[in-house]
Length: 342
Image (cartoon, rainbow, N blue to C red; front, side, top):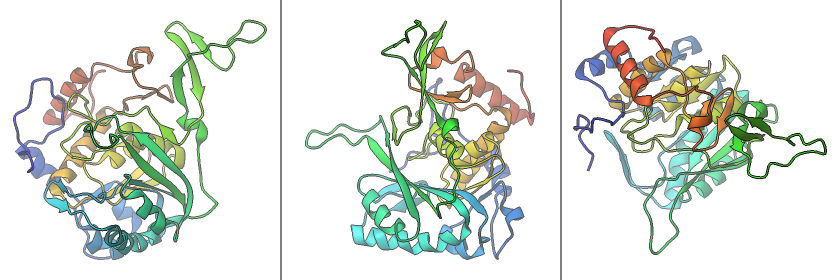
């Protein structure tokens, strides 16, 4: 059973919520389609409709990067909507029904990332490989999760990296990971070998791999957290967007949820568009986008690099007390201001 959306919260809880006034204001600004539209109308919008009903209204070849985080094959409530577990064959038919119709939105050089868990991942691969070039499968560690006494604890998810063709962008240098040096090897002159020695510690920049262990699933004390049950970390989307798009490209998410894809795209200088059936989540998206106009930091990403977990104190003072920043953002939004002193 869903928890009430206006539930009482602990004083230190930073979860982003909506007031009645914000719901009314943000709802009025949501996009709804009734016929085919051009790209200009979709840029930097949140569409509050059922994906199935508007697929035919979307322009062709307008998307540079498509990020898809569909319901996994699990029984789960998503606000006003819900998903019921199916057989693998039924899930494959459900996935195929909308996926094939979505493909015309892609540019010939577009990249596609599709999320799944161990139940749905194999089905996703079998459907997607009929339409796209599968380049890789990313596995990321989801450190939250229930323990299991009769099975292995489920703490990983997959992301399929696909492209329309062999002509696609991949910016490896933009997604390097900064790790603490465990074995500080030096050359014959005593200088660090492939690592940097700094006052705050010894670190090495490593090339991006398809195993991501540096992510934290949003929770109550993180300023990006919402009540969406399957919210992806902003850091995860930052990796995808920086790797597979350029400044000014359009990033599209047909299962937008509480807006992480659009928010991160905005923070990183991309155009964005997303579709979400639940009005509450659309309003949360719009509030987060307003917050992103005031504060564009991404937890775990600073100085142009991604940092491994538990390195907050080393990040050159580019991070700040999250509670203070969140409070300032909330005050600015209430007062209608567009800037605040950092």
